[in-house]
Length: 452
Ligand SMILES: [Zn+2]
Image (cartoon, rainbow, N blue to C red; front, side, top):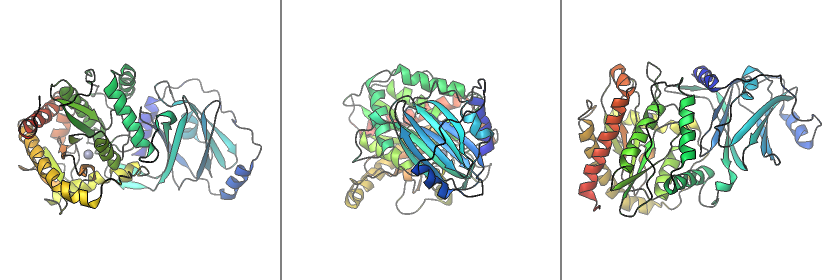
């Protein structure tokens, strides 16, 4: 799988004239370098893939290797840059190609240089467009569903000036909040256009999907229901992949944007999204963001795979705290909860406000609301597709665990079913899914809220 992604990544790379590598940094040894040498040994670690996931929230650089990656990084000013030294490694084509990336649409990276710093160390220098903070993690091999990754080292970069509140949340939470705020405050032509160009650049990755025309974002208004739309997966986590190569993460982002536009065109609701680009957001962060902006409703959108390609039909899930409603529901929850293993979990949310008592008191009330909401949406989906089950299903989905926000997870259709993969690939069906979810939200809202 990583090779497939490599190929796609290569498709994104605009090759310029490659004029040979220059050794970037003087090889005069510092104390830090001597320390590095202590770690180095004779066995060279083969770097098999490097991927970059730019977004307005954060930019991730992923380095994938045959063995566990040992690396060190430090930052330098004037110009703003990070230096990552990968120990026990030598330059290869994958690393060399990194310098050839086109970064004009990357909100954070302006350029990358790569060189063999010493016989056992590859040095990557990342030039930043603005002051940036970084966070790294190593991830062990993952072989889950459609994902097959070896050892990874991920380097996540955030605009430093957007991080305001280190005490209460981790960088990604702050960044997402800042991004959502920006979305609510203005039309954001810059961000929308950069999102569009990202999609356009990835046309070869998934040619059928283009961004629907975005309605201008509405100003936050009192008396409107705030719906947090959560397109599943993203970035390193592709979600399920259909036989034709259709990636769930692209399908659900498109449906999510269509739903957002329907909601924002309505008089009684407004929408925000946990992601508007192809980036990985941990499950706990999705929940934390919904709680911080005080969302009234949380809708996670998916199009997953099941064990048999024969399985088909739409379904809606709510949280269960006492076991799953079926083996199917249990399977779906386990596969969804794997997302954090695939994307890495360094941004575990520290949501200390949620005490056990609060959870017990509010959650049963919230779960009753979630059930009503789920039933309302399932009734609508029935009009456009078979249902996998005539009633909503329950299981322990991590992304549905906001104790105070009615939360549901919609499985639009199975990308693993050939008929439904074809449906999901059409704009018409994706628009229908968005419309039915919207109608279900409206029906639910009519009977559960006093709205203008
Ligand atoms: Zn999914």
